[in-house]
Length: 422
Image (cartoon, rainbow, N blue to C red; front, side, top):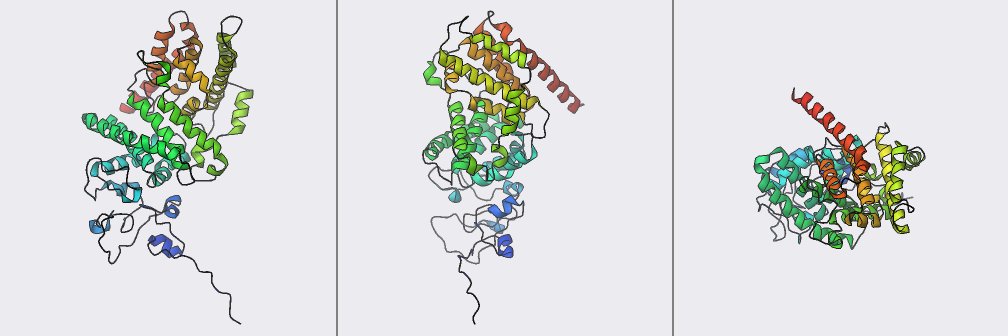
């Protein structure tokens, strides 16, 4: 009696060597397939024996290095292996009209990608598993989503300009070019959310927020309209993109939390409930509610609700940040506050209402906890200076706490820097 017939399946003839040895189907994503990426394995593709010339793919690179989506051979899946330029291209070789697998890389693009994987990716979080996602998983996602790849390179160019200030003008021009290309591509993607791009969309808002914070260079216009613009024209784009990304995560949370981004998307509901039940510095936070007491100041019900909502999240996040925990991650938590506050509260900030600005000043308590990070350094000081100028002497006693906290954090950072230099 003949044995059971084997079920036929599509064979992967262009898969990597690891998947071939394991006899599993390879997704053939470059420069490293998902199987190798998630297991930190070296991902090497065989060099094709022959390849007919076509007009849609760049020619194979010498020595079996990066070439294109089908004829690619990489010596290693490690980010460092991408630092050697192998394809000559224009300084900004990415085209928004080309799919990721057809992109060409310039030497400057590869330098940025290398710097991202070895330096920039490590500055988004203090928690190891989240750093791993930023360093390894997100670049892998970006190779299939052009707007995210542009976003990574834009921010990395700004970071590299801090390390190489003599190249600042050129690197800022590169950053601006990548950023300008990424935004319309992201808007198009967010209007057509699918299982293919929602991970990339959920990450992009974070990159835009950090990019805007850095490119502002410690000016005061991160949260405010400029004086010569109306409030409506300055519903700041980075805030809206960050909040848009947060809405994507919220809508698809149960599915996305099962994927590779889980470490950076996970929110500890238990810690939130505990923080709300036992908030740190409860007396100081509760005192802020007097700012919008309807008996003392003219305020609408919707404004009271918005201020209470913003204060609630400020208390919760601050308590989580100051509570000792292996999952304590001040930079990530600080970024979450603008995404969680009520929309109307942001309108009140734009209108420069004193109560809203005083709450924003207390947001600096979160920023101060991550003052040592390059992309947060100086932001708290410039924001507090602008708020102090705006509210005037009448209200300045209400921001004494964040001002004192800023001084202490700056002293601490300066002492740490001095110790390292010695």
